[in-house]
Image 1 (cartoon, rainbow, N blue to C red):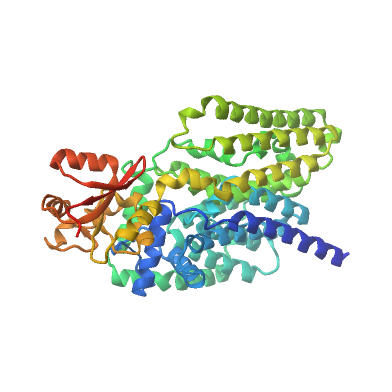
Image 2: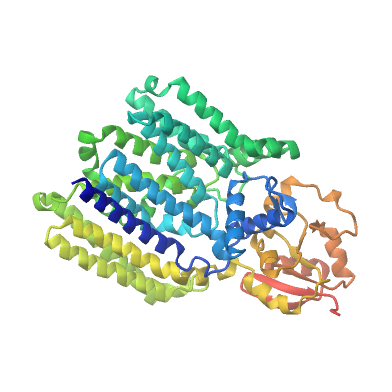
Amino acid sequence: MKSLTNKYLYLSLLLITGLGSFLLFYHLGARPLYNPDEGRYTQIACEMIDRNDWVEPRLYNLDYLAKPVLFYWLTIISFKIFGISEFAGRFMPALFALFGVIATFFFVKKVVDLRAAFFSALVLVVNFWYIQVGRFMVIDMVFSFFIISSLYLFYLGLTEKKHKKVYYPLFYASLALAFLTKGLACFFLTGIPICLHLIATGNIKGSTRKRYHLLGLFIFAVIAGSWLIHIIEREPEFLWLFIVHEHLSRFTSNDFEHQQPWFFYLVLTPLLLTPWTFFIGPLQLLFSKFKNDHKNLLLYLLFSGGGIILFFSVSKTKLPTYCVPALPFFCILIGTIWSKLSDELRTSISFYRKTLAGIIILFAISVGATIVALFFFGLIEAEFPIRNELLIASGIYAASAFACLFYLKKRSIIGIFYTLAVMMCFILIPVNNGLYNVVDKLYTTKYFAETLKPMLKSTDHVFIYGNPTHFYDLQYYLGHPVTLVGLKGELKPKYAEEDIEEDEIGAYIPDENFNSLLLNGKPFYCISRKKDLRRLNASMNINVEIVHENPLFVLFRSGKQQ
């Protein structure tokens, strides 16, 4: 019996790992970098390699202390292994996304059973948003892995009689790595769920064994201090910038980008958990199923996922990627309850009707997408030229709805579950296979660099005019030094332009110096937004030659080229 159990364990893990690897790594390097995030982090890692500096992140040779250093370390390691490329830059987020699926599998196996572990991991690995964030070079997926690992480890340390000496120290180690990835948010994303759970279950005394926590705090201090001490010694202003500007101000101020209403995540999260949220039958049975056998686990999962959503809902700054750490906990709830519902359709008319309602929603989405693609697509085609992809997606939804109807007639809940999982795979594959090449082509400088590179001389100057967030990847693709004009966007509040020599052209030059170069007819190349060039031309009446352009940006040449 034990060998049979091990066989199912290895087979389940193999299926989950294989599917996750395919969805995360297939065509991972096929599309260009996406600005600002991918361009920014690639440039920072490349500059750290060039300077052989593992302590101080710099962006276009300017201190970039908004985030800790662990993500850059991982990116540098990937660059060292695979070479500097789009694939290498995205490798670590994809790898940690896969680690998150595997960690979820083993956690659920430990606290529930193997079947629930497989279902939960499958729901997570076909989650559209989880996979897409894992395929982008952003910090959020690596951060998410350490957050969910910390919360998994704490629950195991709290509930398991064996290995407490291991779980609690690992919890603190994972928390320290989360801190080194994204900073102080890790304390709130883990502390809020843990405190709520301990209060709700009355288990505060049982979780405060000093010997475990003293050792854990020592481990945290060693890991986090390995970088903090060095960066504070080198850049004394780091603590103020990091704590006040990048955390407190961003959390409470309306002065930053990405402002959203307080209910943003309350609306977004159910959408990110589709199609499972269409089927309210399993959701209604959630509490009755869990209350009998896994009440404490139910509370912990709800507090973990809900606590993360609550924290970011209070924050003034909101991005869709912030909620990624909450998704695994909701996927565990969904996967576990579906794994317990094999007989519900055979015995419950109400459950049958609610399941039929979910299938009707799939049909409605298919019909709606088809109507948009055929009759109204001209309204959005300029920015999202994906008519064919939308028709394919609508066909997948329609075919899945028919398959679900077939299994509904046979009263097979397991058939419906696997149909929905396969449907999400077929939605993900064309997206991962190049759809973003169509959508994201406006947010990369790759095509500008390909045009400029053959005509560029080693002595030529290349500038970025205006907000550089749209052009962070230019130096990476160009392989040539690039100078910023002024300090705008996220770099603006951190540095003083008056420190630059009048005739110096280095990491950046003031706007006045750039204007003088234009008026004096100095030869150089420059990339900017079209509206910035129009504004510049209106104020100075300049004459430039357009080298390359797209609907948003323009590369121009100024002065007489030798």
